Amino acid sequence: MKPSMHGKVYLVGAGPGDPDLLTVKANALIRTAEVILHDDLVPAPILALASPHTMVVNVGKRCGTKNITQAEINRLMIASARRGLNVVRLKSGDPGIFGRLAEERDALESAGVPYEIVPGVTAALSAAASLGVSLTDRRTSSRIVVVSAHRAHEPAHETAHNDHEPSTDWRSLAASNSTLVIYMPGRNFAALQQELLDAGLNAETPAAIVSAASTPEQREHCTTLGQLDNAPPMPAPAILLIGRTLEHAARSATNSVLLKWESLFDAAEVSIAETNSNQNLERSLTS
Image 1 (tube, rainbow, N blue to C red):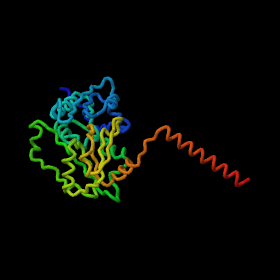
Image 2 (cartoon, rainbow, N blue to C red):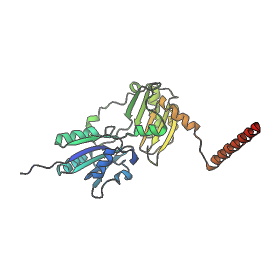
Image 3 (cartoon, one colour):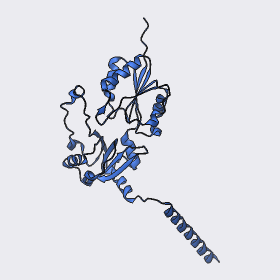
């Protein structure tokens, strides 16, 4: 009897959406994979890197809607690897940040299937970079708190172990020296705002919402915790950042000027006029 042939499963982070932010290793694995099982948020330009011969399957779940269960995803990974195929399980951002990495790792280990975890750039880092801010600053923020404000509506058999999961204890997490990174904040900012105010955060604490970070569709809105309930609806995927490190983003948004060709030409004419005036003055002084 011939021994069973095993492929390998790569649990890969696809980054926040911009193909240029893929790691070199992720890019290579996508190009050489025989099977790609990808989340719904992985954009088409990244999937386009796959070979025409690759089997590409969308196993995504979004806003509580799904066409496949987690157990079925696990079975697809295991069955493909047991056929000797190299499988890329492609997850948006980093697979270890709200990506069900632990559940899929456990399933692969139980089945005896070899796997490797390939980290990716998570949305929080991309969002912060696009705003020109650092999530930590030794002057204002000595820690980062990463939480999810969304609990998916799973079938009963998938959430039975979470039935007694306590609500988020914001009082223990929210502090003036922390940067809060809130994934999947939803659109009910008023409720979240009240919880954070009740937890002791100052209403003037800067905040920013970034939608579709790193993609051409990116949108951002800078505000404060006290005005968070007035923030405009932002398309998913979105991320909410709160903390004093966001002060720089708020100042940049306030001081930003929309440049037009006319203003550029006006500035050039002023510069030329000043140069000519200085040259004339220099000639008069030396003559």
